[in-house]
Amino acid sequence: MKNNNKKIEIKNNSTIKSSKSIEKNPICESLTLKPVGYPFNFNLMEMDLEITNEELFEEYSREQWLGLLVKKNSFLFDQKIVPDYGFKIMNAKPNNSIINENTKIKFIENKDINNSDLSQIKTNLTFSDVIGQQNAKNKMKILIKFIENPEKFGIWAPKNILFYGLPGTGKTMLVKALANELNIPLYLIKSTSLIGDHVGDGASKIHDLFEKASKNNLAIIFIDEIDAIALHRSFQSLRGDVSEIVNSLITEMDGISDNNNLIIIGATNNPTFLDSAIRSRFEEEIEFTLPNDKERTDIIIKNINTFPYKTDFNINQLVNLTKNMSGRDIKEKILKTSLHHAISKDKDIVDMDDIHYALKVSKLNKNEVKGMFE
Image (cartoon, rainbow, N blue to C red; front, side):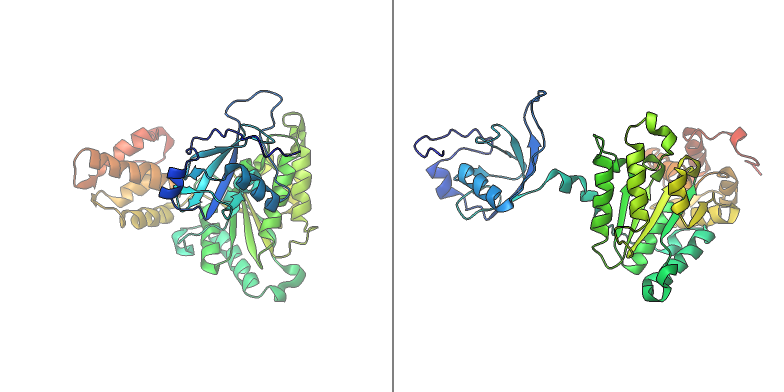
């Protein structure tokens, strides 16, 4: 039974209640809170909260924090049902304001936070930014035609596609370019973030991902490093949730939950690690290869044209020096490192000495590259 005669002392590092503060500070119109748990932990404590009725939670919170001064990135602590459980103030409108009986309070659940990276990815990439990989680009043409006229394809719609190949060869870049050019939602997720702390978490996260994406008319789900969650079930002894996650992913890929508006693209460096049942769900496997001489030339020219400094080195020689390197390695390990080296030496021009420095620190030696000085 509620006791209105006893005043509960509220410990709060935002501020304390005072008539002086109320006169000086504006009224808080809205408050957004994120649960952060207790300031200490022992085995009997449950760190996560689940709000079953947002309206009741708002009333419950507002009553005990009435008159408190709140500001962004400070904390509020519950003093009723779960004493000392902390909430971080993600936003207070206006900042440094006072909670009153009309303040709107929103609670961000942990699952909403964990899925925050499932929102639509926005980029300015186009197909022209992806050099080479013509086979993959041809498949993108099919996806474009399907997205432009999905009714025409019917049961022949492209659905599940697997990209595989060495890191840095353009798998993620091509998917971003597709979503940008067609202006459709892209849900780009690292598969490791779909692995939960407890058995059952992974399957739940996969379901949440597909459920959120399916609310769009059309959307692309891109699962990078898919082998991390779609491991062959022989690895069950190493990680207890392997079979459960694989079965959940199979269910979603088969469209049992009516995800006909979704295109699923997986990416892996090594498709042999995939569970055979998952791998069989992909209608096509597209290999991303290392760039050839012409493609490396195009990559180098495209990137140095954006350099803030002039260059003075032989492009053909650099093409030979970067044989067997991915486009990303050429850009990040060679061109970027050589540019930074020139800047650190107070030079106005990036020359061959800077290139050789970049090759050295990238641990690329003469024996690893055929025809290095051809």
